[in-house]
Length: 245
Image 1 (cartoon, helix red, strand yellow):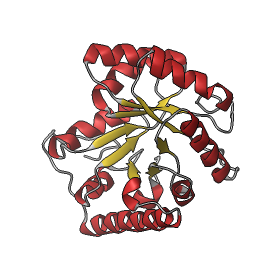
Image 2 (cartoon, helix red, strand yellow):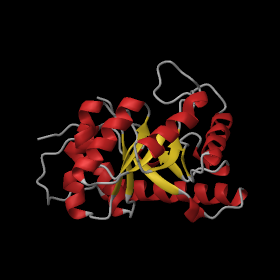
Image 3 (tube, rainbow, N blue to C red):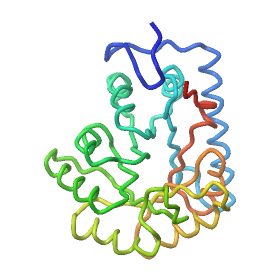
Image 4 (tube, rainbow, N blue to C red):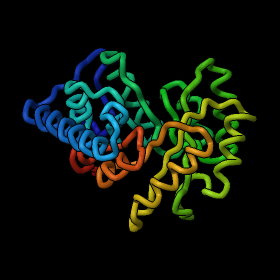
């Protein structure tokens, strides 16, 4: 019986069978991305260990994610709570050291599940969500690292605090609600020079005393590293094109 990407019929202890060719391909891709990160970090007089590679498993077949795990990758990002819930309990029963980041929009009715499942929430983008996260973390006794999402391009269709409102929102989340805010994240507009947005995010983080910057994806992560990214979110360059069918 076939399963859709992100879904599994396996029991919690079952490994996913991985084709040896695919295993090697994914491992080689991860190594190639890590080399590129190291080169970009070196150009910025930073160490490669200053940058965490987040492998984005969104809509990827379970076999590809298993291949990444077999290659030693342990930090992963998911866009949707529901997809992650159907995927990660199996993997985590066998790979207990996985760190899972939510990097997609979070609806308030999914906050309880998100706090249960994830280790890091990168998309705190509005006051209502921040309040619900603070309540749920207190209820569950879990303190998840949080990143404030900044809509650096001020795009109407995209989530995130506007740059002009960033300082006030960061203060509300950190000081009023007591969220463990550790950094910022952004997704630049597709047609803009990403360097301008990465530099803006870096400046907002600097003036607010935040050290972590989640910025850069498969097409621009090297630029992001040169401009201070501590976390890059890479999917296609590791797993290949996504299959939405």
